[in-house]
Image: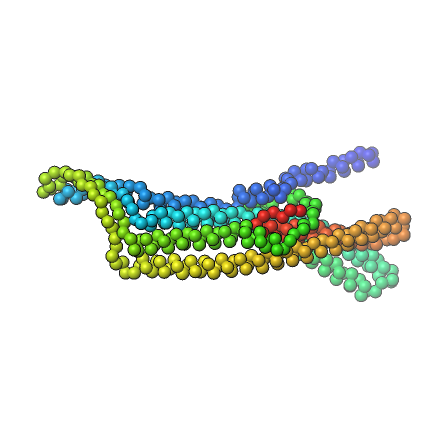
Length: 409
């Protein structure tokens, strides 16, 4: 009968497989791929690239014939016609304009790659942060269990007259503080999950389990070489230089338009109309040169020149900003490395203390509270150690983004 009751109780307890049936493990690479597929910021970048492709095509349109059909009813003096204009030469105005728009297209493609790299970095940070918060929450639960057990023990001793009411009050306050810490840990975990879900484009519940990534290697990095690589590889700096090239070509195109004419050919077939002797065909070569447009072209040149000066200053400022950013992230990496060493030593000490407390509790030399205290200490130091691992991984990812390439580990 006893075996039957145990068997029935076993059947009522849900297995881990069934409990986790609605969720699956999401690796970091899967999360990154999901973000790249679903995040709307990349779709915005795709649209920007398509816009610039259309502008390049529009700039090239001057190289092709322009056909026009004009029909007027009733016919009056051969007003209805079919005509074609073809640009012959505009003194490099159109070629420079095409080069300027191609530079803008390249800039849009670089900005798309920047958005992609930023999205990958944000996904890594959100992924690592969520894992760290999960471990912090587990440790906080163990600390709460310890304090609740300690409160129970103090209340029992108080009932026996061996503890004061002040001791009970202090224990209750400590339990309340830990419960607040638990609420904070739960909230931080939900915020981290929500941030990750937003990056991945997930709507509704986040039904995924993240895969712990606790393996790491200490990186050896030369700061001067890192700064040199960053100045050479950073897409933000490349983007500014490409924009500078585009503005230079645009200035040339505007000056060509201001100082040189356009030579074009025109052919037209005009329909017979009232008062006309008959339909005819005309063709010829012409020159188009605007004499005065209220200084609008000259103002456009000056505006472009001012933008060029502004961009040159922005390039210098960006170079200095990149140097400062790499230095700061390098220092953050070294700080994360030191925290990693300290928390690892603390974890090792807590493990030794836990094994000793476990043996003493088994031999009856210590109480359950002493054992739970060592267990909670181990959980806390382990969570801190795991968090330092993920902080170190985040520091590496941020430095890789700042340099523009992966760091050898």
